[in-house]
Image (cartoon, rainbow, N blue to C red; front, top):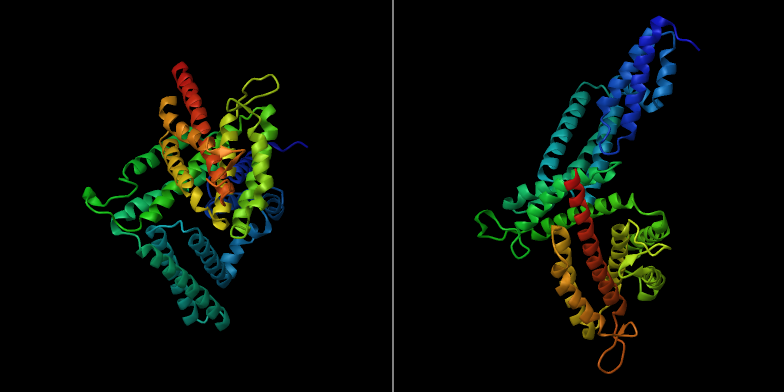
Amino acid sequence: MSVPQEELPILEAVINIRNRLTALKKDRGHYVRAQDVLSLYHAVVKQGKNSRIDKDQLLIRFFPPQVTRLNDVREEQQPHKNRVDTTLSDQLLDHMNESAVYSETDLVTFHRRIEELREIVRRDAESDLHPEAMTKLLDRQLNECDSILNSMQESLSELSVELIPLHEKLINLRRQLVALAAKEGSVKNELKPLQEELRKIEAKRVDGKFLGPGGSSVPTSQALLSSLLEECFEISQEIRAREVSKHVATSLKPIYDRLSEIRAELENLVLTHRWSLRETDLWNYSLSLREIDKLRVDGKFVDAEGDRPPGQYVLLYLLRRCYGLIYRLLSSSEPVSEELMPIANKLSTVKKCLNEVLKYGGPFSPRDLYPYQLALHQIDSMQKDGKFVSSDGSIPEGQGIVIAHLNECHELVEMLKESMAEDVEDEEEEEMI
């Protein structure tokens, strides 16, 4: 069907609007702002007035009914808009409170917005614009928001004044990492500066503590900041593993899919049955992981030709995560006997050191990993037929926990070896560029 010459500009404008809407829909790295959608909505209305096509037909094709009625909601149903605002504020505050990821600045913004809504409701009530029942409902919801905000404010009151700037910085870094994790395509260049920021913050700690100004005091709320920093490092490692997963060789894809499946099931168990599981409940998972582990040759997964295809790092990462989840599940419900406590403590120390090496990244050499490999080899040699046996020949409790911990440490070592090889490849590529 041919378009009249005089309507070609309208067609081009409508196609442009459609492309912009499509771009908004596909951009998962940023929140969609209401003003962006509304500006496009008004652009469609304008083009509808200029063409032979009914404006309503254009709106139905481009927008869902909720958006096409947004202006009517704002102008004709102001109490409903206030109801939506208070409900969304309530839900968002609940989510932030549960996640415990918020800063003083966030709470100030919410306080301001709730006061604005309260003032609007008060003015409308004085003018008798809305039914009394609506006003009472809005007042009750605003009071609920106040209650949640006060609870969140009380949680932050435990944060030392000296550490508030660092806390806000970590919250901001975490949000940037989460946004990066939601982006499609390669984010390697964007991830690197965020990792450097985290390493700078980590380097400021002395004996695992954040110090106050001048380094003369150890402020309170160390655990809050340390857990937030660890969470940021975990997200950055997850992003790196996801980047590598895009290049997993076809021959390794079945292993990757199986490990991803096991990890998802274990994460679900952490959320639902963490305190009631026994070692026997996780036996099948441990067995599956051991079978996958046996597929490696000299620590690497190989294909039918004996070559080492790309995707090694992400498989090692998934193995490590799975063993770590089993350790968490068992440590919540199974005790470790006194005979195994020295081994468990030594493994905790080795794991902590390996995680520090992983966080700082390269460059490092195989010699740097030798002390940890030696420590793990010594612990390996203490096993008999895959079990740790006490001096009287009995098998003490806590086998599953200690073995899962040991396997996680081994996977960390292999991950570090693989990351060394990848760093060398990256440096060679940069030199070629």
